[in-house]
Length: 138
Image (cartoon, rainbow, N blue to C red; front, side):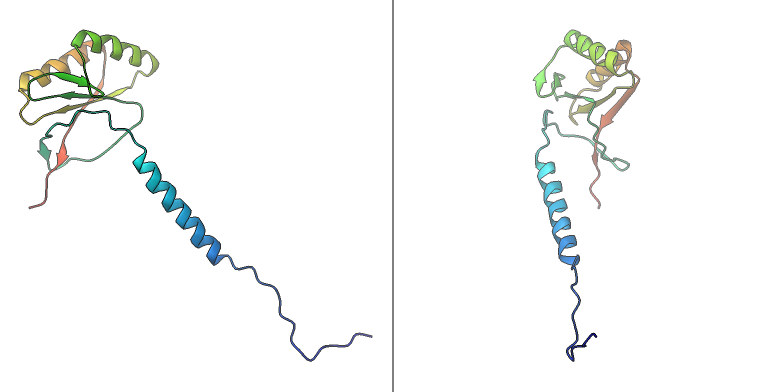
């Protein structure tokens, strides 16, 4: 014979809302830490502004910079066009669709930018883009 207790029996509950809060906190923390771990390997140049500029960073790219004096840089190191040719051909052998981004100072002579662009075209690069900064809203 079963005797019932006059007190209500409470069932155990598993609370998952604190678990969800902790997971979102960990996700946000890892995202913030991963943003500080990126390495900037470019020369600081004063980029020209464009109204249709978008940011797009991809891991397998070549970033070149041309300063106001026409000097060419690859990952903050000065490089000649001949050394650039061997570097580009080596990277193109691994990836035929390798994108190349060229950052030019606003005061860079147009001829220096075209010389780099023409040299990349002769090396076999098919995807070239110029880095610009978004135009500040007026």
